[in-house]
Image (cartoon, rainbow, N blue to C red; front, side, top):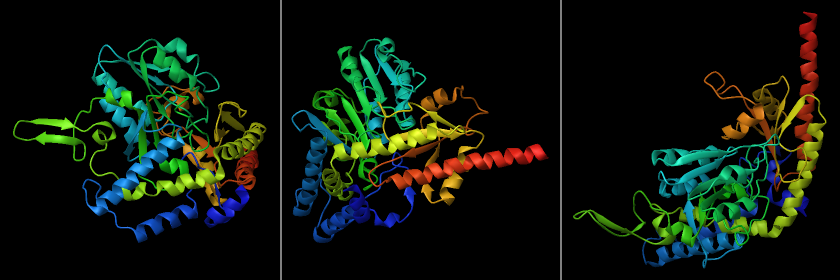
Length: 416
C-alpha cells in the first residue's frame, strides 16, 4: 500500500532519497490539489467580522480546531487549540504567560530543542528556580523523578528527541502533575509517526508544527491546552483579535476567553484551510501502519550503522523506546563532508547539532566553550511516510564509502 502511495503522492521525488523527516515531512500531491480546489472555488475574508466571507473563514478555523483535537483523541469539552506560526511560537506563548516567580520552578530536560531551552530566560527573569533533568549513556532521561522535585512550577520536555530519536516516557506527565507541576510536551518530532492520546496523557500544554506532520502548509503550528491550564496563563500584552474591550482614555482592557486571547492578530486562515487534506492523507495511511513502517526502516538503519566499525551511533541501538531519527558520526570525517557526499549521491540528510545543545553535549562528552562553538556536530538520518528500504540503503552506501575513502587517505599519508 505504501509503495503505491509513494508513486501516487510523491512521484516528484524520482530517485532522490529524502531522509530528513525530522526536519520537515514531505507533502503529498493530493494535499496541494485539495487546497487549490478550495481556494479556487471559495471566497474567504478576514474572520474577525460577520460577513458571509468572514463566516466562511471562521468555519474553516473552527473545523480545523475540531480536526486537530480529534487527531489527539480529545474534544472541545476539555481542550482548546491555539493556532500559532510554529512549535516555537506555541512554546513561547506558554513561556511568556506562565506565572513564574521565586516560589515556582522551571524544570527542563537536558534533551530539548532550543525553542524549549529558551523558557529558562523567562523563568530566570522572574526569579524562579531553574533545574535540568540529566541524561544517561543512551541519551534517555536518567531517573527523572529523582531530580524533578516538587511544584508549583513548569516542566517541559520532548516526547521524542529531535537529536537521538529517544522517546521519553509520557508517564512523566502524570507523575509531574501529581507533584504540582504544569507540563509542556514538545511533540513536533513524535506525532508525525506515532499516535498520541491526550485523553491518556494529561499534558497541560502540547506544541507542534503541522509541516512536521504532513509537509504542508508551513507557517502553521498549534498550542493544544487543557481549558483549566490555559486559564492559569497570564498574557503579558494584548493585540488585535485578542481583546473584548480596550480603552486608550483610561488605559484598561479585557481579554477574550480561551484561544481567542492567545491568537495575536489575524490567524493564517488560508493556510489553516490546508490542514484537512493533510489529516486525510494520514487517515488513509493509518498511524499504526506508518509507525510500523518507520520502525522497520529504523531497524535496518541502526543495524547496518552499528555494524560499521568507522561509525559511532548516538542513543539506543535498537528500536525499543525510540523513533525514526538516528544521529551518528563517521570517525575522522567531519559531518559537513558526509553531508556533501550525500548531496552528491542524491541523498538529503542533515548535519549539525539540530538546535539541541543538551543532547549534543552529552553525546559528544564535552563542555561547550568559545573554541568549540560551531566546530562540532553529527549526521542525522530520519525516515517517514515516503521512504523505502532503497532510500535507507542509498544513505548507508554513502556512509560505507567513507570508510574506504578514509582508509585510502590514511595510506596516502603513511606513504608520504
